[in-house]
Image (tube, rainbow, N blue to C red; front, side, top):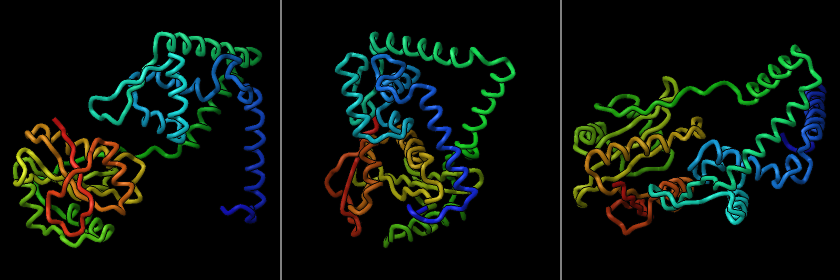
Length: 303
């Protein structure tokens, strides 16, 4: 809704009520104080330490996704916590661009203190409530969380095809139109890929709907190499990590099939796709095919 646009009276009252509650609980829980729980950390620092403590060896990108914070901001906070010898960062063997995060012994002790202080704070808030009011409060908080999260998403299923079908042809056609592909696969060429060694096609399903695809084609010109092609996720399904799930399945299959390198081509305008590939460990390389549309070539070592 644009700033300054007219708001219906009922919605205006609801917005006012939410803002009033926000002001109340931020004061009640001491969230406006410079240091969380009057300790040594800001609220954000304390939350970062907590998340690393419950999920050791999580990546910095996973932490960003959980907290929904800017990458630069997270990086600065992690650097500061590392300098304070509270967090340890180690380079991931699977992806050299990623850092695996763990707490140091000092960091673990700090989190234990924070947990104890938080427990005491909440215990104090609940101390003056009887059992019925405490149960009502917890039930209300659970309901609020459920409403704000929204309806549960259908699980993502990744299926490897053994034969070309209407679902595969339909989503490939959508992909061709979306990225203006000139050299397009025919049903016969797709079936040939499905029957070839170290090759295949995977479909992603949300419920019963096909929402994504990826193809792997063995490269005859490069020993122990294959090509990632036709990676696509429908706009309506993005945000579910479907591209990652498709690539996970593809890479696991390629590794089991004796493939050492996966190559791909793309072009410079596809910035989100390039960022995805780089995050997953693909590096730029020399041209390896004659695709007239491709301007960028990448590869990833998988074994």
